[in-house]
Length: 368
Ligand SMILES: NC(=O)c1ccc[n+]([C@@H]2O[C@H](COP(=O)([O-])OP(=O)(O)OC[C@H]3O[C@@H](n4cnc5c(N)ncnc54)[C@H](O)[C@@H]3O)[C@@H](O)[C@H]2O)c1
Picture 1: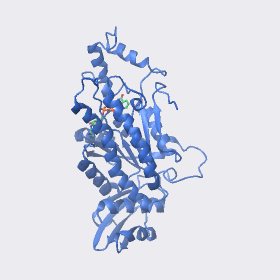
Picture 2: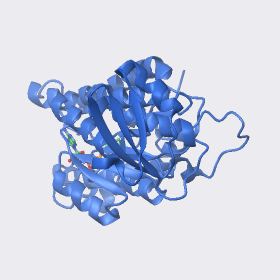
Picture 3: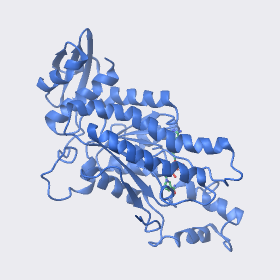
Picture 4: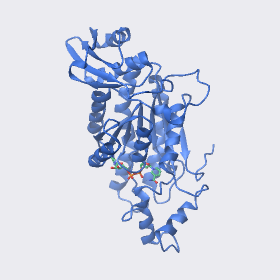
C-alpha cells in the first residue's frame, strides 16, 4: 500500500472516532507514544483502524504486512464538530463560517482573483487551506501572508495529470486527506468562432473543463478512501463555474462552452460520488469587477474595452465599469464575500448535490 492509500484511511478513522476534522501528517516515529495499528493486508486495514484506540491529539504507527507508516494527528484548535457529519438532528443553520472551521481545503488557482478571495475567506473562518496554483511564487506569497500554519502552497498545473496526482500525494503526506475541494482555476480566451485559433480554444477547454475532471479524479480518490473509514463524514467538491455556464456569451464560446460542460460534469460526478459521501456542486458567479481580470490597470478588461471602444461613448475606465454594472439588477459586480456565502451554504447543506448556485446579483435567473 502507498502513503496515498493509507493516509486517507487513517484520517477517516479519526474523523469517525472524534467527529472533528484532523490534520494527519506523515511524520517519522508518529510523535510521542503513538498508537500501534497492525493489519495483515490492505483489506484488513479499515477494520483494524476501527478497533484501535486513537487518542487526539496524538500519533499512530500503521503496519500493513511488512510496511510501516507513521503519522502525527492534531486539530486546528477548537473546531465545530457537527456540520461535517451527517447531522440530521440539527434544526437550524449553524453559524455560517463555522461550517468550515478546522477543515482542510484545497483551492486551485488560489494565488489571485476569486481563488485568493476564497483562500482568505476559508482561512479567516478557521480552515487549513492548500493554495494550489501554476504560479507557485504567488501561492507561496499568499501562504506566507495568511500564515504558514493555516495554509500551504502547492505548485500545480491542473491541466496536467501527473502534476495533479503529485498534488494528491502532497496532500496525503501533509494532512492525510481533506474535506473541501474548490476547483477554481480558470482562464478566459475570448474570440469569435469565425476567427479563434484551435490552440486558444483547446487551452480554455483544458484548464476550465478537462482539469475539473483531473482534479475530481485524483482528489476524489482521497475523499473516497477517507470515506471507507469515515462513512458518516460528508465532504464537498465545489466547481467555481460562471454565469457563462448558465447562458451563452457572445464571441466567448470557448469559455461559455467549457463552463456549460463543467455543469454536466458536476451533475454526473454528483450522481457517482454520492456513494462515497462526496457532494459535488457549482457556484456560478457574475463578473468580479474588483479582481485583476477586470481591474488590472494595464491588461484588465476595463482598460482593454476602453481602448478598443467596445462601450460606445465611454471615455474613462469608470464609464466602462458603470456600463457593465448597469447590466446587473443589484448594480454591482460579484465580490469574494458573495462567493464565500455560497461556499458556506453548499458545505452546510447536507441535503443537496449536483446543483449550480448562481451568485450574479440577479443578472442570470434560473429557468426550468
Ligand atoms: N473574474 C470574473 O469576473 C469571473 C466571473 C465568473 C467566474 N469566474 C471564474 O472564477 C475562476 C477564477 O477566475 P479569476 O478571474 O479569479 O481568475 P484570475 O486570472 O484572476 O486567477 C486565476 C488563477 O488561476 C491560476 N491558473 C491558471 N491556469 C492554471 C493551471 N493550469 N493550473 C493551476 N493554476 C492555474 C492562475 O495562476 C491564477 O492565479 C475561474 O474559473 C473563472 O472562470 C471569474
